[in-house]
Image (tube, rainbow, N blue to C red; front, side, top):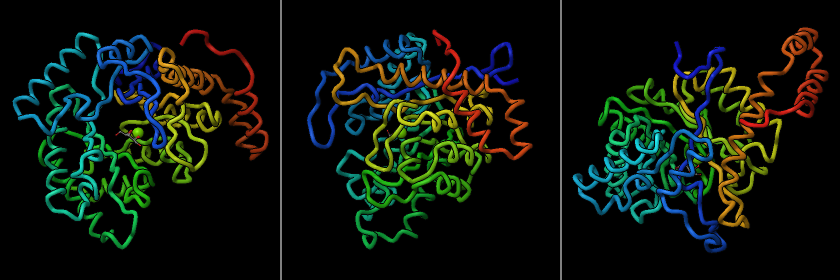
Length: 358
Ligand code: XLS
Ligand code: MG
């Protein structure tokens, strides 16, 4: 019996975000525009906003990680776990933040520097230790700087092998963890080595334990790759490898916008909720992450609305997914009348009332 279902047997979705989703509004062209919230305030806000879990970069959980001894790391991670327990919050995953240090300047697992590749592995192992101490077995790999600005700068064939090798070493380091690859086609790199779900799933099967390597699909990243997020999720779901999602929205293939979920393209968002529901996502404990950013002009006092709105949008769309006239849908599919099916979906999205409180 799956754990996260209600009395009617429907999935009880649980929601998460990361501390970086409440932020000061800096972008590559301008400085912060809002004062920071302290981490403890973010924990409190998470519950008030209706969320259940927090996502972490390794150094969100243990700040100044590189400067700490193993004993200091353990102490800080345990303190974080107590903080989460007291607030009734779970940790969804830990992601090694490999892209900010000078030691990741030319990539991490695929760097041309052997010393930097070693650093990336050691740092990832620390992220694993932290994950276990704060109560999660899931490690997200956003392979930020694995790629090039200039194709000739690296041997791409070797780069794939290096990534698989690094993942194998992490799987071997801790036999209880799962690795979730978060594909992204560009930004910060021009040419990224793991741009799509297809690449992530293929890499999973190249490792020593494919049953422990899956994926985290981010909507904006799929759109940047020219793909539809629901198609990317469907593929991962079809092989049982969708273990987290970063739902958000995006105005076309520009920079990574991390807009609030469903605010740009409602039908696209509807299909994301629909495919999760079709795939039984969340019933065994995988959570719905919202990797969204507040728009820069937003004032500090209202700089968490994007999170509340994203969750609300998910639940509104879930209501739409669950209330569409499936008999009418089936009849139109049987008649191959897809024009009318199109209209049925749009009419359903544009009419009817929405639950007031979600
Ligand atoms: C950046 C990614 C990042 C990861 C977490 O584009 O979305 O936020 O999700 O490291
Ligand atoms: Mg993300």
